[in-house]
Image (cartoon, rainbow, N blue to C red; front, side, top):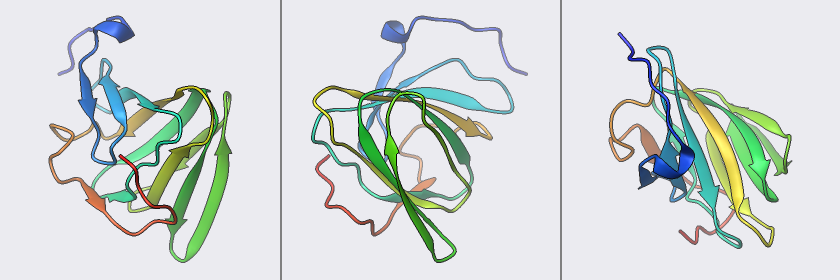
Length: 133
């Protein structure tokens, strides 16, 4: 059973996600978890796919691009404030910061992320860009 939790972003634990982005872990419930992800200007994450979770993203600030590939379909979208996207189960994805400031995204994960970020759920794969993180 989930506990009632709250907290401030700056007090949340800062960890490195499997793709290389920085994440702050936010309060979760039994059905899902949420993180605040950030990526420095010019940075490009590693391409990955998830074995057991899917995600929804909402861009808070910055400018970048998100690549997704699933079942032979590929799409690159611009990430900017107000843009939302999904990462269905098994979708390969990679993102980059093309702006001058921090790229910040809130990511909800369903079911909740299974344990620590480096637990093996995210599998590195080929993507369109050379990772820098």
